[in-house]
Image (cartoon, rainbow, N blue to C red; front, side, top):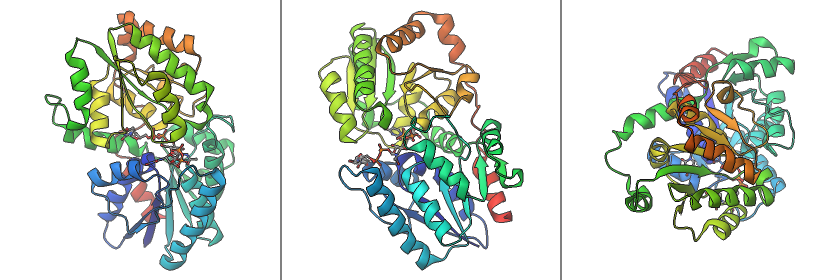
Length: 372
Ligand code: UD1
Ligand code: UDP
């Protein structure tokens, strides 16, 4: 059986890598990897350390593309790869534009599609935007739905996806996280990419707050409020904020304008996956609007405050590891200070739990794909 796995952004690379590896071990299976490179540098920051070498690299990233640009570029370029390779199955992951346009290109050629991380729903088509609709489009097309959790399976059942096509597998991000944690080898020495953080920490015994934020629906006022809240928190003087900033200029410009000059804030370039996991392990708590980080933080026992008004990942909230704090400046400060100042509240949120998987998702996905 020939299987083509297609991805294009940083989080898809993290979450596809365990599946590529597991499928490649199986005899009689031909696995081809195609990256659209909707992201370039930050995709390579995952591919290189994990030793993933794509068979096709479409190198599609361009400066300031519209959603229409990305969709049409991917649709056309992936179509050519599908016509050349004629795979028996196509696998996609998650909810990016690469994911949606690839599923559509496969559908146009009547090639069966497997969707990894199927069934996440926020219930709001504009938050996250455009991911909520991207995932619904993929669910309409796919005929293998790999739901990470029972909640995700239930969302698919509500949309009349046949039960026989849905498998609950866990999320492959936990497979990737466990693998990288195993490679970390303790935390005695800082990874060289974290040198600025190490230097900043030398000037006092501060707790690290790690931040990531890049969501489109937060661009503009939402992100400004987040950054102003971070400034207020940094002014306390007893925390150090470490923010690997997403390369999107719409994100970078806002973040640097508000936080660029603060001595208790390190704005650093995006990190390779290994030092990023190390940074999460070294953090006291995490503020993020990222999907993947919401899943990784509970497994590491790090409280996570979600900088969004909705989430398609309610499992972390139900397990007590995450709180949805939105993008209101005052609320972000209040909720963060509660965790900084109330030891009981902090302890309750910092029990490591795995609502998103047990590290064996890729094995389950592989079994189901090969049996399909
Ligand atoms: C995309 C996904 C989002 C995912 C996020 C993960 C869509 C619509 N959005 O959002 O679901 O959460 O990736 O990060 O698919 N850039 C660089 N270098 C890079 C990467 C990006 O310079 O390595 C800049 C480029 O100007 C690029 C822009 O960032 O055009 C934005 O990338 P884009 O893929 O449009 O959307 P994201 O907001 O990153
Ligand atoms: N990540 C990384 N380096 C960074 C920031 C994030 O390796 O500087 C990893 C993170 O651990 C997670 C994934 O990238 O696995 C999340 O990507 P992102 O937040 O860009 O996308 P989302 O999950 O929101 O779609």
